[in-house]
Image 1 (cartoon, rainbow, N blue to C red):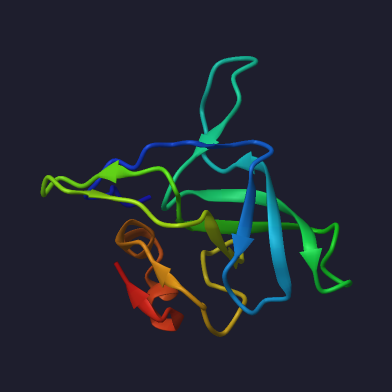
Image 2 (tube, rainbow, N blue to C red):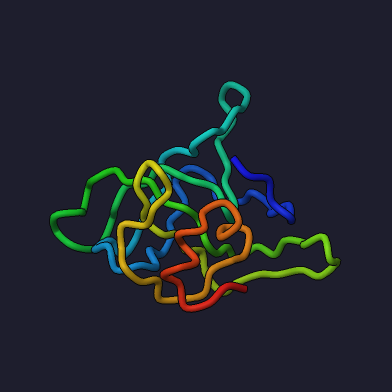
Length: 132
């Protein structure tokens, strides 16, 4: 997994709700696990921008509701600091549904995407409206 040029604060824990920002059929996701998380017993796994999470689809297409999917977090409300010295935050928490290789299932992303997510998953940048 590629290292990031910033250190996003990991604030989205298990049970957090995310907006699904692509046209895969899901509209709202709930985090049920974090991929590649190594932690202590009884500690709630956390994730931030650029992390892959396992989610349950809560709202959306009736065929997708209740299924488990993998998603990459592309925006978070909590501000984090980039190494250039400035801080960045977004207005919502959002994710994009991907397959096991990190390739998006949808064909377009409605909003902007954080640069940290694009560094790890370049295919997300190809279908996004913009990278911040």
